[in-house]
Image (cartoon, rainbow, N blue to C red; front, side, top):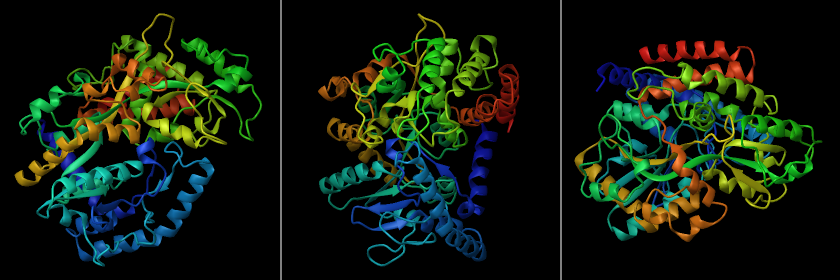
Length: 532
């Protein structure tokens, strides 16, 4: 274990406490993070609801009462303006999809109605801090991202409680803007954390916030039932159970292809073909009052965190034919500045493609005004139902194809994304209860419910043959899994990805830095991030 890295991550968490209630941040993710509300909510099987702001107040209570009061007052006074900002952003996006959902962490509006940013009153009329309830005997707490995942997990939690009288599962909406790290630092962590494949797992493993799972009762049997590619060790241990997977592919609007004189049955396979098709589509007139674009990139998310690199990585991997990731195999140094990694080619192609794209995803693919999108993950499928005018259907309105490659004959790669289940470090009793719930969630019946409702691909090998995944709309994603590359899980991968994304903004979006110079800048920033 890298002690300096552990210390750095620990103090980062502690520093976040002091500014917890003052940090607004715009976020958006896939279907399981739909544009609903940004006020983290604690929901138990009994129906008690508490905003995570209350939990935050408990966490920040470790400081002074004056500091806590001031922070709560600031958060409360910002609620109205933040809610207005979030509403305006959502209206401008023209949809409630995750791609365009913009809400503000300072906002404290909940789906249940009017509560305050400082606290929320439970059904019993008492204010409860999330951290306090997490440690109660006979309870299991699990954090999930906002949106549809909350609804699905509540159903599974109630099902578990009915089968285990005397045990209650609290489903907690994960707070954003660094608040979750602050809760961990204050000892108010939940029992189970639903995360994402990649560096997020490595970050919490390096800081010893989550525990190894390979020695838990029945772990060997459970891991043997999982797709091997979804089970990766970091720092020599298994720190997560993969609950659902995802891969990135390209989707395209068949109607726009026809209007542009293109064959919908022949999507572009190479970078040059992609650029030529994008140019033809961009020349079309406006669609329903919206300017027509050849393609789109989720540039809004460049500042959301290093996880966003997973959506750009397939283009990068295609450019170097999977010879390089961002870091070397040990995670000790960057590798993308080597000539064989062809980062300059990646910058050059995406810069050219950006000419046929809007600056952000304010108008996304589901607005029907975008020709092609190379960052489509299977978990976005439910968003097709909310497309402009009427639902879009894969096969009829939408085509699916591998992400284009530099030249004909190259292999098209994808990023292996998905949702993970990790157990937070607490007490042996709490950890054992959490593990029992994880095993319950991973039974074929319950896991199939999770991935069907939230739009994920199976991680249990027994579910791959389920008729549900033989559907023409889903089979291409199953087929692409063989060329999907799992993201690096080193905690440092997050910092390096953020450094690359910052330079990408300058090279590709702003066009202020030449690609070759961008590689040098990204390498300098990446190595500097590794030394922090």
